[in-house]
Image (cartoon, rainbow, N blue to C red; front, top):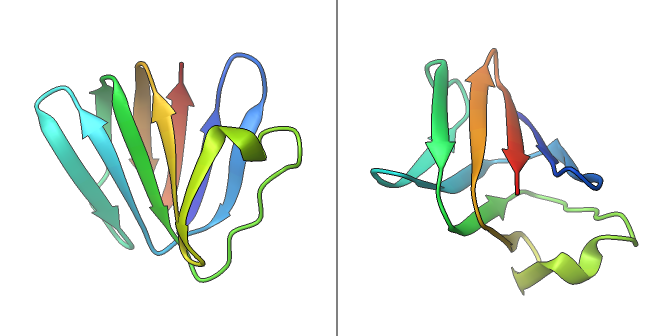
Length: 93
């Protein structure tokens, strides 16, 4: 599935991922391939991205924390997420 993370300043991430864990207002939740369509509000927390290969733009690499070769996290204050047809769009603050 494809993940895009966009902030008011820049596109932070775009690429194929295996899973994404997000800080929802009612608790953390994970999205996997072929997940049902969803729209949700996000609260302050971390987005956890798991992918076979992660490539980050040089301008924003310092905003991510590398846990291992396949896992990165990104701290956010708030946002929204939409998942439809194996494409996830996160609008993050």
